[in-house]
Length: 264
Image 1 (tube, helix red, strand yellow):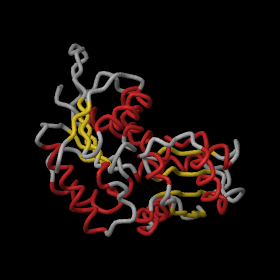
Image 2 (cartoon, rainbow, N blue to C red):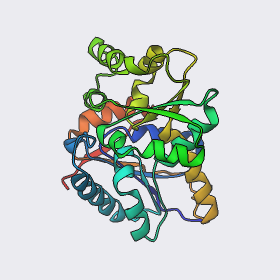
Image 3 (cartoon, rainbow, N blue to C red):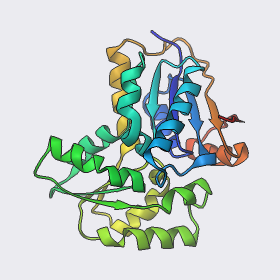
């Protein structure tokens, strides 16, 4: 048993979609979360800057004595996950491989769409992972640079958001049977995305799929939190406005959270 918390990092609020799934599947585990909303989105930034920012978040989590780190950001996973995993002596998970694997299992016609930030799409990492696992798959990727700013602004149901989602996803409509939400911010827009793509298209939440891997690693390394320790002290940190972060977090997680502003 290991009663230390699990650390989550993201460019902003998107990783909360992973935390919500963790709280559903593994409600006895404790969370420390850092969201770099002051510098979001990461997607349009150069790779070296994303690498530097991600390491700052990793080092912050290490000061909180976490037993595992989840890079709950597709862009950061694409750029620096392998490097972080190699340098730390605790388990480090990314969100891309679980999402790619789930898409292959889900598709009925071998036509998979991937939406993500410009950097994630530019890296072509989803197509590479999917085709390495299943070469017969046909993968179409689409960058959605406007989605993260809308989520970070808490504009989840506005008419502008619906217009942007519909216009952005139009090139994929009718061309895929499975769509990977290749950014952990995107599940916050899931109802609008589903409405645009149609009810027959299966949406894959890469972050939610990642939680299954978290569970496997907790068991493998025997670092589950003791079920006897009932009191949880979830901690949330943001580099931007703590009140706005708390509004999104409380709405999404359906619980009262304490959010602290930090400067990295």
